[in-house]
Length: 180
Image (cartoon, rainbow, N blue to C red; front, side):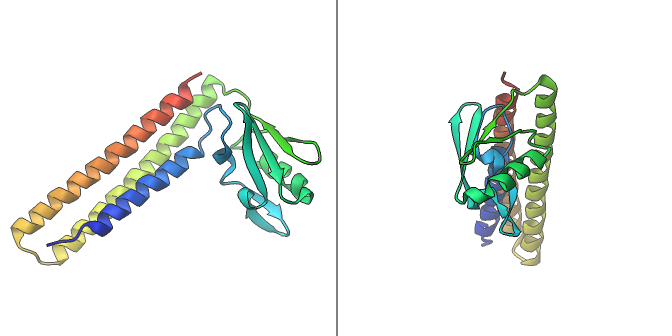
């Protein structure tokens, strides 16, 4: 019998990666993961922000960033200001950085949904590639025809489940983004 454990794990990894990508998408509310992809110039090397500071939410529309080393405040503020995709303007008082999250315009919300739908397509492409590789491996194993057909059906079912899961996650995120 053909083992689909690796296939299922690969699909699960794609869905988990997609979830983590969705958590970075701005929705008009403050969320620490908004800055998770940000690199800060610290000690001469680009470093993820979570390794140089603690990012928390002080209220629904403000992020509070507490650097581990106060000497990094300027570089953290600069990194946030320079990332045009965020569109944020941080303010620091010498100890902490406050980042107000401006309300999103309708146009900006539509733009965010569009870029998020590109992430959906990337996830679906990854799922299709995993499916194709698994079917190719199934055919190379020279199994009996009925076992091969059963394996293909199971692969297709798992693929459909993962694709539907991606679509559900996107619909929920789209509703969250468009909610004023």
